Image: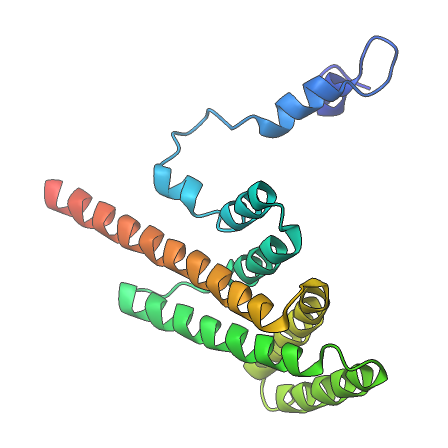
Length: 192
């Protein structure tokens, strides 16, 4: 290996993985650019997981984190209003998918039949246009993930609530980030 190779940093004197160095490297933040507080907050999955670990309710925290994960890639519009509408449509899709997952979870072999029927109906709707096909594939993946998460939570309705709360948390952080960027651009334009 060349001396510029990053994995070489992790090797100890005996050739094994140096866990302390690895942990330090994983937790290191790039110092090339200053980090705004809003960028740190925009990682919506961290807070639900941290709270769940502190309360020793990991399955419930995972439900909220999955809601954050699914909402984490909401599209951005050109304006705050367009971005807000995009976030609301993402939230509606998450709520509908969570409800569909809740209907199909916990019915033994009937859950498998319901899952196949729902995926078939979603796939048929995806055949309408290219945009519908992309959304349908996302919904199918969300449905599979949410069914798995809801089957691990002690109460399905609490799981749905936490998924929605996690999604709302992340979407609000996204909206706050967009507002911050828009105001930063406006202040730059005014100062010029």
